[in-house]
Image (cartoon, rainbow, N blue to C red; front, side, top):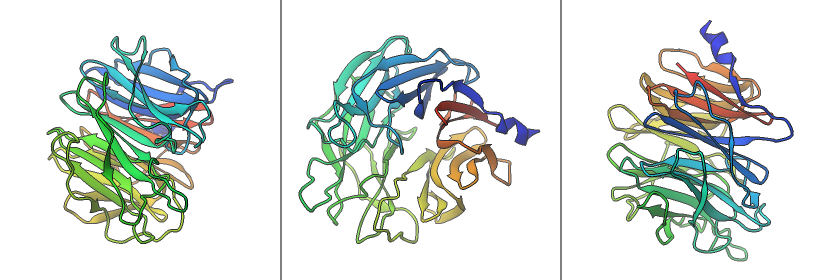
Length: 351
């Protein structure tokens, strides 16, 4: 019965003439927020009962050609003062231009207003891949793949960032979070960032050093002002003369340690802070969240979208046609999953 329950995912947004893609979740207090995109438009929905029911979709804006697909798309973060959505868009899009833009709502997502542009150099974020996260006290941090130093014959992709101390009203000057000694990080794998409950900022991205495309983690103890040394995740390396277009996920355990999931070659691995990697399953596009019962992970395999949950020895099939899953821990401690399937947004509470 449990298996059958998980197979019956709810159809949150029906796909009619609109193709909805790339959902992202965030939760704070009693509110769960979701954003997703469609062509030129950004949408928002919210839930006040841990994802059981949802508001009608609100169109946030049509900012131009929206970077969308393959982990591109809008992100959402929640502070005590505002809900903030970020996205890469501009007139032409598709790598020709693109700035990291924001929108703010101070009435729990009912109405939206255009906010500050995070990137301070036009076109620097045109690759379209970024992340945004909120600290417990309300600070925001964003990181993106930056092309401002791209030169002829030099791939030049770097990891840049900015922070906001006023719930997204204003953002700091852009700064380099990491520059690879090889001249470029991996050019089209999405970064991931999260604040721990203690306020430490962790940022993860796929690096490129000597042809190896491995995931790295860097941490900041002062909210993004300064960063420590970058640390490679995993024991082996992935020699690859291409970009796999696949990042990873970060979560914090009940004991306070960081745990990451990411792909190397055809497999998904998990690594706990200070520990060795653990082979999970064959797959790609992994996500992770820490719920009341422990760690939850989800990923795509050749057979469909799967999830691994505490208390279950085998993965559970969520959707044979699902892709690009996102996870968040909702107010009651459960973990909510959302994903795209053939122009619709699906969701399921994992228990």
